[in-house]
Image 1 (cartoon, rainbow, N blue to C red):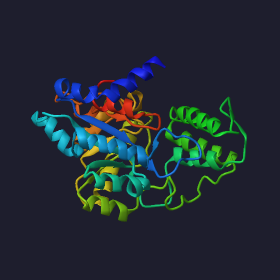
Image 2: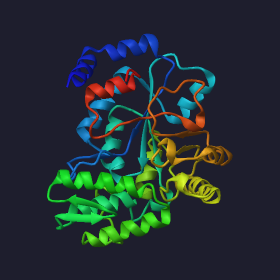
Image 3: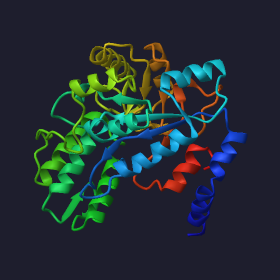
Length: 328
């Protein structure tokens, strides 16, 4: 409680912006978003925030930062040109709600952004495995679930949120083939259809080609790669990693008609890529790669391991300000 009060007090007092201007000017802040929604989900998912929260955060960034595309940020780091607080807005996965709810806010503040696409999933009625799991948990009439030696109470939104977090944590440790099998079985156990088409404007629907085209043509949004299937790369062989990396680059270049120069590690933790992964990404011709480790990006930060501040449903506005100014 005391720590939260301190965080709130520091954020309210405007100290983060003042300290950033005097002490941390050379560190670029890269923010990692996922989904932006106009109404709450049936149960909380850290990756999805409200459009009101997103608007408040982008308004703050536009007032206190120079917001640039990731491609420009990399050039600034290469040239040592960072002389004032600078921020980069990124989104992982490529949800349709990035177009529906985030894009109008980006236009409102003339804020550029980068969206990392999962190339095999775009422009269709499929979605990512963890979205299918959450949809099944949202829609199930089951009040309890036993899986992999764990038992979950699904009688409340909080119980479903806890089940989703624990199940996802276990699944992410599995090789991709077993993970996909387990997810299908879980969805069936919950009474869902693992191959059900994802409805248009569902929170879990991914971007269409027309939506990608409009955002690209606006000049505000550039697109990067997030693999073909969102497979966690460290669970794959070197050959499989190379295929996920190279094929996603080629596919996204075909979608956007431009070079795809930036990559994001799926999941983004230290254990989610191995020593060969960064080399494969560099060899494929990418200029940068981002993870999900927090920190300031300085001229000597490895371009294949750029830091990002993850923004989620539990990110209070005070904490947001401390993070983006590298205070916390």
